[in-house]
Length: 84
Image 1 (cartoon, rainbow, N blue to C red):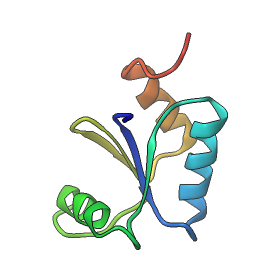
Image 2: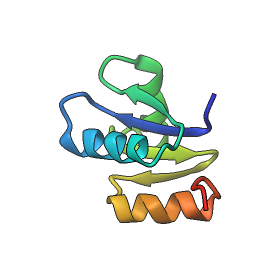
Image 3: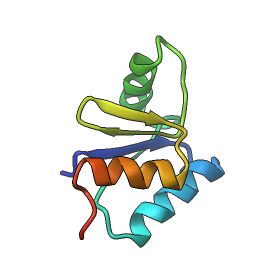
Image 4: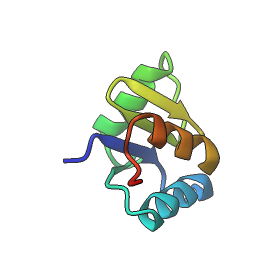
């Protein structure tokens, strides 16, 4: 199972854009819908003191809230998740 996780919602365009970006650069990730997966919702709420904020991308204990694709690319590079 990949350690990179995307928490979003099906109707959310930002979630869809991040999902498409990760797929386009062949980065493995798990995709969770916070509206249909109670465990995913709970995970995200735990990061933000009870608030449901998405899209959120996590890797280990680090996370990004609502990143741009540029911010996500930097995050992936910092964690060695992009092929050279």
